[in-house]
Structure formats: structure tokens, C-alpha cells
Image 1 (cartoon, one colour):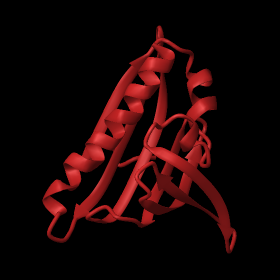
Image 2 (cartoon, helix red, strand yellow; image 1 turned 45 degrees about the vertical axis):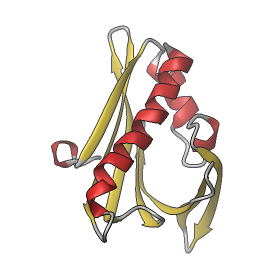
Image 3 (cartoon, rainbow, N blue to C red; image 1 turned 90 degrees about the vertical axis):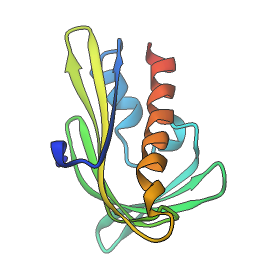
Image 4 (cartoon, one colour; image 1 turned 60 degrees about the vertical axis):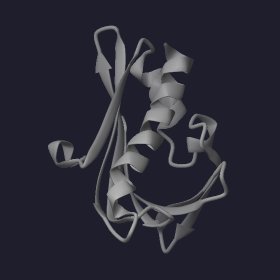
Length: 140
């Protein structure tokens, strides 16, 4: 799974919905456009037996990501190409059952690079926060 405490950026939201319900909505590699307000489209492609996705943001930015690992309630992926000022970007999105619902955790490890590298933490954190806020509005 995720590198956990080694994540450079991580965010979490508590939801009152059942973990199975939330995971059914967010757990697929090709479904981010259905729940994250900043993602306009997702196209999943198979390259030599590996799953990749092309993400396009509402601003027209494009990301190319590779599915690394998936489990019952988590998905780990890498950003292979995109506009972020980062290298070695590896992220995990997971749903953890709680007594009265669940928590959704989203964390990433990466190396900031380039002239805008100092903004990487802020950019990633804001992207995660917007997605998690959308889930909070949907699931309470």
C-alpha cells in the first residue's frame, strides 16, 4: 500500500457513508471524472498489459498515470507525465472503515523539481482537498 508516514502530502476526510458505497464510487481507475470536480475526463488504456489513464482537467491540463497496485479499498498510481513540478510521484487513495462510516485518505510521495517545485506541496494538497470536499458534500 501507501508509504503512509512517508507521504509528502496527505489529506483525509471523514464520511458518514458505508465504506463499500464510497469505494464503489471512487475506487475504479477510470472513474475520477465522476467525483472530482477538477477532472473533466479520464481515458484508461492498456499498454503492454499495464493499465494507464489519461486525465484531462477542467483547465485542459493533461496527466498520464500508471496503475501500480489495487486492493480491496485502495488504489496506488504513479504520475508518468503531467504539468506538476514533480518527479517520482506515487499516490494512494484509500477508504478505511470506521464505526460510523469511513475515512478517505489520499497521500502522495514525490520530489519537487524545477522553478515551481516549491509550489508542488501546495498544488497537490489543494487538488486533494477539492476532491475530498466534493466527497464530503456527496456523502456527508
